[in-house]
View 1 (cartoon, protein in one colour):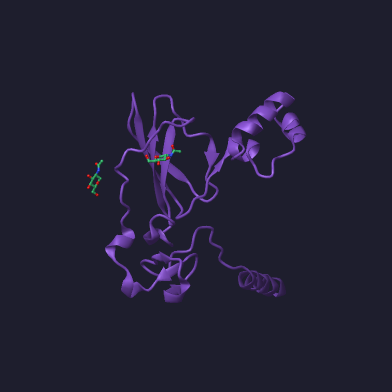
View 2: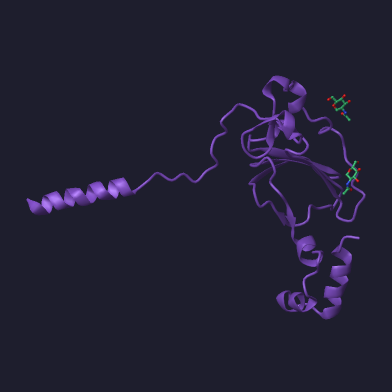
Length: 183
Ligand SMILES: *[C@@H]1O[C@H](CO)[C@@H](O)[C@H](O)[C@H]1NC(C)=O
Ligand SMILES: *[C@@H]1O[C@H](CO)[C@@H](O)[C@H](O)[C@H]1NC(C)=O
């Protein structure tokens, strides 16, 4: 009998000591929160400040020019038009952004990661020049382009570290650091 009671007490204490944990983004508290930079005329929820909801218009949810072909005459042969919260204020707190990618023949989008987003990519056209659209699971997914981050960081990573880490010749590291360091 005592054993049964102490078992029940133990279960009760464990139940009280545990709590519910969730591992996904909390839902926004509002339908929309158009981002503004001027905090004087805004309402603050989280992330960016919200425009006064009485002043919100359809234009806050409109991005002009996603249908316009971008120039692709650069070294990598691609041009990314990212539409994140900085370009389309209505995306604030909605957890989504998108991008248009124009590719030259044999062009590429260099290896990169998005620290705050998962990405889905759809290729619309192919063969000679290609067009793709992506959707990202963040209003501001961020981007780290590997080659630029490694060889073009400012201040630079010590060449001796790069020589050993990438098993490269000193001359190659110097060449790559020159190629990727922003002017
Ligand atoms: C892009 O769409 C706009 C309408 O939003 C239209 O006026 C324009 O002609 C289109 N441009 C191209 C290149 O299709
Ligand atoms: C992308 O295209 C736009 C418009 O055509 C151009 O102004 C911009 O310089 C291009 N960016 C790159 C990286 O080529």
